[in-house]
Image (tube, rainbow, N blue to C red; front, side, top):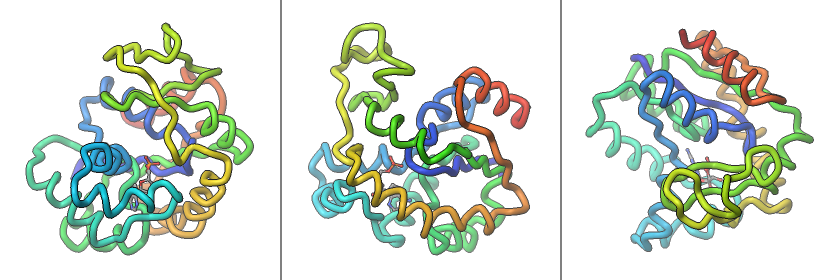
Length: 207
Ligand code: AMP
């Protein structure tokens, strides 16, 4: 199946690059983090159950995630760009059982750990359209206002130093091993530094 997975630690640029890939290559971007934050802001029963888990930087249970994704996949006909799912070997195996060879490419965004902290603590997101900004490297044109939909930007409540440490540790333990699981279709992208250079590298890989 012609779907792509963006794999990388928190702050590696998955959200920003997803927007680029979606616009350039016509994939439909699906971010499980965005879906879960949406459930929380709408106050749905699922949102109420998972709010603390996200705030602390822990992972939502595999079965909840797979059910959420299955619902979305059933309605979808386009090639997908998955951002943030699967995040554990358990999730990956459940997807593989249901949809063999689900991913044609897995792009691993390789960024030095020191860069991740700056990216995370300076990050702003749009709660309405999910656009991602950085106060230093990619600020909005108007202070705190989304360029795309003009909503007021906010900081994620899990983008603090303390929660970031937990998210990074969780990533290393539970998510990074997926690189081995998808070894036959994984491509490493040097996602450090200038955004245009990173986009060019991705263009080469996807063209
Ligand atoms: P993200 O926006 O991808 O950084 O995800 C934000 C948070 O949502 C994570 O720290 C987890 O708490 C939760 N989350 C997102 N995707 C998953 C997943 N596939 N499995 C478990 N938890 C997830």
